[in-house]
Length: 198
Image (cartoon, rainbow, N blue to C red; front, side, top):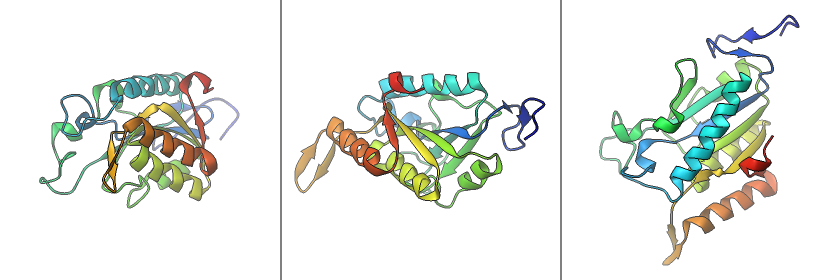
């Protein structure tokens, strides 16, 4: 990087990044998770709204943004079917033409994608993670990112999940979310509320 001003990075065309060391990962904020979708999550509209605020801040600061979306390989999937409206990124965090979109088929956003290559190509060292589901793809990406050596911050009120069941016991979405955030905060990431994130 030169000292003469912003540098345009080829994998983020149109974005002038002064300090590209921190990037945003918006994970699986797709229509099927929102009201009217095939797999609606608890508190998803609130989480999506907070994620949109995080996104706005990254855009204002000229920092890299990576949208991650899941698409199952077959049309008989319960949600995120290939080519479906439900698999599209929700309008509240719709990507700009200059922002990278990573399509994945695994829980971990780094698995069999070029996400790490794109991050490393522009010198990213730290990640901010928002999206869904807290106990699945947020955990998967955060743990993998920490293992790769990235510093990770998770904005917990910009993440959502849904009720789960284990061994005949129903587990409320709020408890699923809390357990995931507690685990990540213990050893993988700094877990913050949006109002405390700087």
